[in-house]
Length: 200
Image 1 (cartoon, one colour):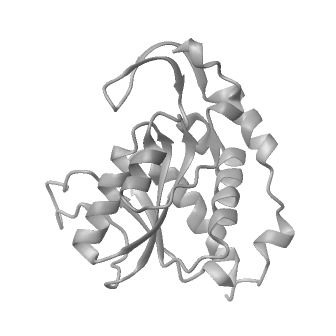
Image 2 (cartoon, rainbow, N blue to C red; image 1 turned 90 degrees about the horizontal axis):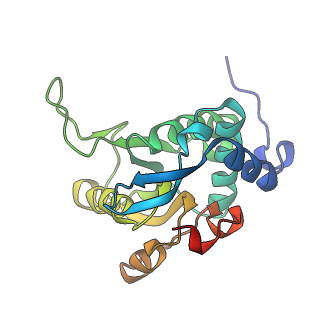
C-alpha cells in the first residue's frame, strides 16, 4: 500500500524545549563516571535514556531532520550503540515524507562481526560519492564520530556533509571537526542544560 504523503515540517513543529526537559529528567546524572574518551567526569549524560523513550526518539528524529532539511543527503548513521536507536527513529520519520524516502541508514559496528558476512558497516550499500551525515548521541572529544566519518570515506568514498550530535559536552569536538574540515551541528549543548562548568 502506498504511503500517505505528509509534510513532516508542517505537521510536527520542533519541540526543542521539551527535548531539553526530557534530557534533564532522564539523562543527567551526578557522580563519578569514566567516559569513552578516558576522562573521569562528575556529570554524566546517558542519552540512551532519552533515545529509547518513544517521545524522545520522535523529538530527536524531528530535530535532526530540521538540521538537514536544506541539504542533499543520501545516508545517515553512526557508531553503535549510541547511534543505532537514533537511526531507527529517523528511518521511520523519513519514510513519512517523500523528500527523505531515498535516505539510507547505517550503523558502524566499530569492529567487523566475526560471523555471517563479517560486515563492519551495517545497512544498505552506498554508492561512491554518497553524501553522508554522521550522528552521535553524546560527543565529548569527537573522536568516535570522526572515526566513523573516516571509515565511510575510506570504504565507500563518501562525502561527509556534517556531524550531528544529540548532545555536545563542549570538550573539544567542535575544534576537532573544524580542523578536519567537517561541519559540526549539535542538537543540544551542555550549556543549555545549565550545568555549571565547576561541576567537573
